[in-house]
Image (cartoon, rainbow, N blue to C red; front, side, top):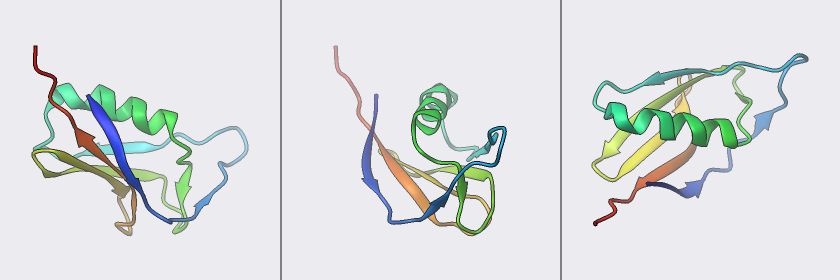
Length: 88
């Protein structure tokens, strides 16, 4: 399970007319099983494009419990996700 842990003060600009498709690039170290969950979090968030004008997102694994969702071009962080392991 993933949970948002913080949100940066990064200003976002509105989507262009007709909508904007964000390109998502994943860190190769990010487990494949996390990618659909991260993609859904990005889709559910209010990210349209970065203030630098980029519409590309880079998802990186900071450590074993933290995923950073940031601008691919300038590196500003949109938010971090915390990985929570559920024990059965």
